[in-house]
Length: 477
Image (tube, rainbow, N blue to C red; front, side, top):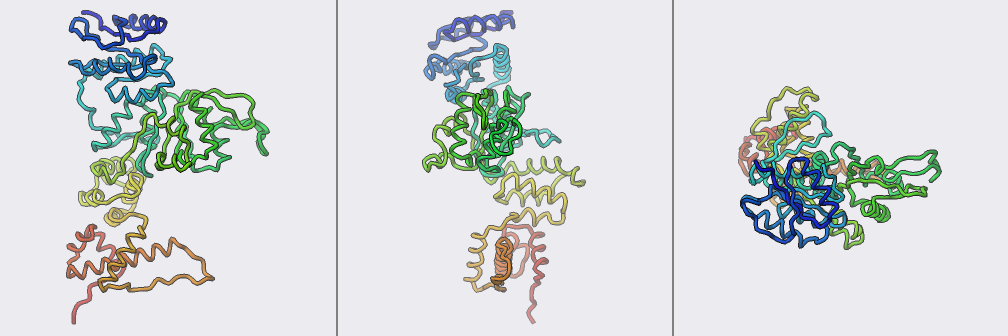
């Protein structure tokens, strides 16, 4: 049987010699070929191509296009220089099996070629729908989804995990940005190294700078000793910068220096500290809108935006809700002392119909509350935990306009009393909700099941509300 053939498309003689020795020792027949598109004859068809675009940049991807159009497609591993990491995204979109940033360890190249061959032999069909196996460790990133949107994100995340480039993850609060970041790190070449998280919104500017970069003894009052920063602790690993949109412009400039040169100075330090850290940045802000307003540096945005992943909110992928509920049930039931094996079908239906403004985080908290207080099941699932004042005010106005009016006037505190806006908001929301419920009940001739359907809540939730408000239908005399 003939040995598998590998084409090296590279003009660097030293690199070709180094790679040839290692690949030959692994049983490959290595050939150095020109970069221009060639005909893939059956008797000379390569098992894989290692394509260097270091000298030619984007035009060098023409061979990649030809290789992926071949029948069957030929796996291609792309090599790029550190200053060409934007090509990584383009290469992956064109179908590259992997993209490695030089200098490349020959062992990593061999591993990438073998993985590309195994993937190609498994077929060129789309990646399977992500499933999950229960993990007791909450720090382990478990990717759970049945939606097409998340399937695409999962596929992209799997590809960019090994590319060792910055990734910018966007999405509303609670959609799972940190889970995706941990998923990327877990499947990267740095998986055995630390992943250090820093929340940029949790600390003021001065404290955040010392937290990220550390300080020398005597740098400021109270600095009695040297402290390493998070970037030092994450050396050879990964730095997860949460809420990066809240970082001050001064720190943004320092972060840019770290990303470009891999070095920084501690507070009060006289020497530069070199680190090798991959940065994963998370934010729920629109950075593309923050840049024109001067709230975020343009150069840092483009440096982070090598790969951008935007996670859709839960309301746009409701097919994920049942499987997420099942996962959270298995994850929390033992700790919360629940013997529940699965959720009732009508409760899952309520969950699916709800919009979940707090996304996956809110869904998880709701599941936990249900496991503790199952008698509140429907009410918990039917209403978000936080009131929505604009919607409630509009509902109250509609009820008043229809002749319902407001049964009670909210008693605002006197100037001498303490004012709790949260309490007042809750009182207003409760009264407005009660008026809408009463109006719908009257229009439904007090058919509570019909009213519950019109209110888009379950029957039991409506009964719980009427019991809480101590409302009964007044019989005509």
